[in-house]
Length: 471
Image (cartoon, rainbow, N blue to C red):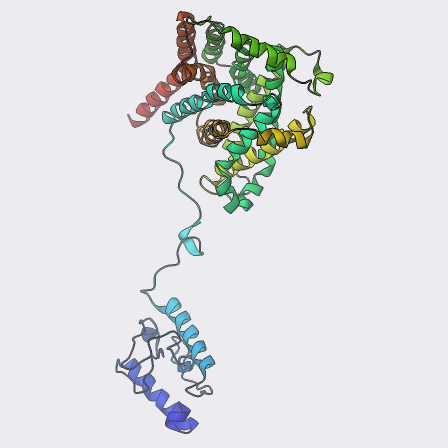
């Protein structure tokens, strides 16, 4: 300005004339975009770009600082030269601030940036799960968990003898962690927030799976399946002891009926071709040549049935505590929407993988170098089976079940999961062409009826209460 109009007094007079012209709605002769509100009424108007003005960033001159917004105070300050970039940038920032504060047409601050907009990061409540859909989701997840049965049978037939059951379980949980690992990498802070409850749940899973494997070494798989079906009764007892919940006679009766159905189902003699002699000899050879595990020196005298029942107890504790943790939500208040469930699932799977790896390392008859050599000998199709077993039939259900546990009672959830042996056998019939007889059909029907009846009654009762509220 000084370079164009001469002395400071000339500059000041020209700026005053330009301000008066802006107040009257006439363009000034300075060739710049001016924001010089002379009164509160003018202060509420939006700035206009005048003819010949600049169109890039910083196009508002430092003259905008000459007049205070909405006061009409035209007290001059020292006006700098036209080419002083710092003054131009300062004027642009001041004008931008004035526009945000004074313009009635300016958009309100978005949610999450302050004001009454609320928390912008908070997601809406889940609406796709209801008391009707949640039990069906658990039933689908039970089918996925049942897929482990034929997959593990296929893995057992092609893996070397040196690959122990704990090591296979570690590989399974590594693949399960891959399901949610990308989300966990980009949300490490959220995962760390729930590390405490996730470690607790991971401990129950680790102990439950370990005891189940140890029980399978000493007793038949049918016995372990029947013992695992007692999870529903265990969950009810936990609720009665620690939460003072009344024991439901219907759920208890259905739990007993489910255990009886599983006993009938798993002890059925298959109708069809007998097991070939070569396969029988191979199974005997695997049992004889299996190396002695270090844990046998500690729990060698404990019956397999007791180990299986202890494993079922920890599975029941896991279901009960998971529902409690999910119902309480994030106590810190930092996780919104579904972030709490996703972070809990990711942290739980990762910590359980580490715990199982530690157990496998100390409870293996081979050193670490030998274990790595065994992994190198696995074929591509074996790795595909392990990936499907871990990611599809373990990792995905462990994530989705947390959302269903927010709605379904833990006793009902564990009762639905009692159908896992049934779905595992049915998938084996479909994909492995395994034979089955009439006793298997009767046992399967009993399992389905007893495990789903409480959930159906709960849905009908919820529907009746909703209708009463409407009426």
